[in-house]
Image (cartoon, rainbow, N blue to C red; front, top):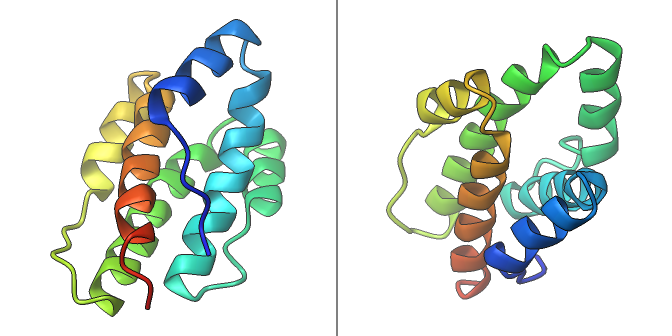
Length: 116
């Protein structure tokens, strides 16, 4: 359902490619979260486009929404879940969106072991 990705390699590839891999990672990660939560309207292409059009402001909305989607995916599988929306917003505010990607990817990798 969701692809298992190495968080460390994704960060390294993002740094080596000067962010180009980060764009790809954002899209596929958002798609994975949408599939895991059952919300097929939560797509990476849409969120990337909205982030570009709003000059980055939408990234804060995405950070909050991705936390909600992850909580829902965890809840559906009977896993312990928490709302990380505020943490993701703060990280994003301080320019640490790659850390948000890493945290979300880590959660996606964990859920991958618990198929619904």
